[in-house]
Amino acid sequence: MLHKNSLFEISRFIKVETNKKKIVNDPIYGFVAIPDELHFDIIEHPLFQRLRRIKQVSLTNLVYPGANHTRFAHSLGAMHLMRRAIQLLRSKGYDISDQELEAASLAILLHDSGHGPFSHTLENSIVKGVTHEDLSLMMMEKFNQLHDGKLDLAIKFFNNTYEKGFLSKLISSQLDVDRIDYLKRDSFFTGVAEGNVNAERLLDMMEVVDNNLAIEAKGIYSVESFLVSRRIMYWQVYMHKTVLSAEYMLREILKRARLISRQRELPASPALSYFLNHEGVFTEADHMEEVLEFFGRLDDYDVMTAVKIWCDDRDFVLRELCQRLIHRKLFRIELSSEPFDPDYVDHIHHSIAQQFGISLYDASFMLLQGISSNHAYHPKKPAINILFKDGTVKDINEVAYEFNLSVLSQPVVKHFICYPKELILKR
Image 1 (cartoon, rainbow, N blue to C red):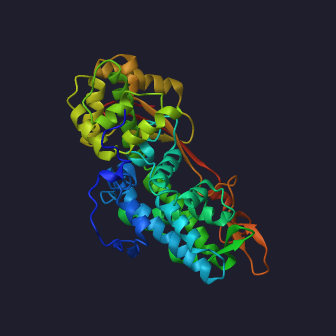
Image 2 (cartoon, rainbow, N blue to C red):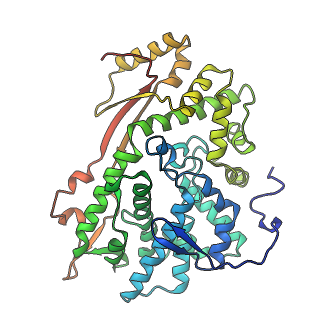
């Protein structure tokens, strides 16, 4: 049953006359304007305000203390870049109507509205079987209902079903305003200067060829810099080994909590309790209205409050994981370019069980394994096109002069294993 004060029922809020022409002072771009009343009303809605309580880069602040920026700020920044990109394309003579501008602006504003607590970290731990893109689309459809179909075109852009495909490429591609903003924003707040990109130069070099985006040949070095910055940010920030350890510990906490919830009630917010107790129902259409309602109430605060409470739980494994995460006593992490020897993994597994006096099954929650990988530039996805003066268009992979971009096209794969630091192991 839906909450009696549903987030989707905005009529319950007191209507107050207010000036809806607002500007936001953004540390990256300066003043960012809220363009019209529709944007303002969506931004003010609780479903969007929730993004203020979701960190953009999850638990990265355990390594980079300044990395506390939010999906809310990123969404406004991406909207600003979208409007700037379209302004520049219009100045070059490309036909983009005011209606298309507003639709593209709304689509990118809401492109991350489906992110759950700690963004990508818990994407398949809270709502299983549903991606954040799926949930973002559902959120957009809800906003469309609330605003009498005014987001119809924005949804087409988001789904890449509109005839002007280049506008959808600005939302999602290998060189889109989403990536440009998060690289600039994340590098700024982490202090990793190597991740910064020249947003204005990249946008200014954009052209449209055969209904697709392309970059003028003289902007090729800016694209190369963008791809190198992306690779650096992935390995120095997003997949930093300490961040991986913390994020996988948090996933294991939710996994353990869900298991315990089958036997007894765990203290948690109503929204988090709903997802702990409803595993496996989220792909069924008749549940999605209820899922969206509870999901719209869920953010980082729910999860971290529960983790703090569970620090005193009677279950040893849950208590141990929560205490270590809260107090930043994170697991040791080992990285390897090759899979770990199964005998070595088995040795660690038995050592954990012996040291803590727990079963091998319980010890499996304290032995975390995974694979991290990244393409700075994916050769099998739609290319970043380079436009030459003679009108020819080539994949940047074919024309990168200063260094061999095929290196950045190869995925970097790292196997990792995490376990309590108290275990002194020799390989």
